[in-house]
Length: 310
Image (cartoon, rainbow, N blue to C red; front, side, top):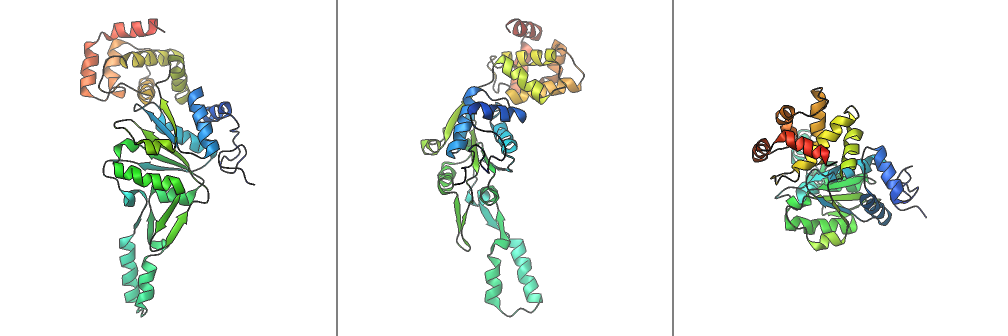
């Protein structure tokens, strides 16, 4: 009997050793993702049981990066469905390529084809079907399917996803039922701008991603940006974590810490000074109100206090 996807030595997991949560953590680290024990455990369980992984947390904590890292670990393509308000089944599943169908009709007319019924039948074959992300995932499986920011989509789209994730099949009336040869590894993310229905969560392994602690965030920065010095990584991380407690509209996430450290490294800065913080703050704070609030803070004191507390 073949191994299930994600099982140790299974085809879908490629040659990666995923025999335990610790092994999952180590494989993710090889792809520059530093997971804690809770996250590596829930990923291990999702792979073992072939259930979708539902990751919720504030923007910038690394939810989407999990899917990218898994794609690397499993050596499987990543298919991304970016959700947004108003997205519907045709935008996520498939659509007909009407311009190509029209060209085909005109070519048939120009060629003097007499069998009109045969030409019409050709218009609704797989040749003229445009696969959107969900159908791509079924056809490319094994793959990692990232359904990003599901909280942006409408309730109706959630119900539609429930059907797809239950059977991993798609019925195209003109063609028939298309089925994945292997269920894709599904990662669903939410920034919790609204509550996602329990029915969807029940089908998934759920994990809330917190911001990393100080030492792990430094390690993340240095893993992603090896050229950044230990001192600069410590200072940027300390100030970023202090800003998270400053009652901002959008506290900086790990992504902003990495962006900020990268910006400072590009400027050949080796330590934080208040004027440098102010000049580069746009890498970490994306709202004018947050930047104005930060300017009213004593940045020098904030830097000293943040470093003194670590």
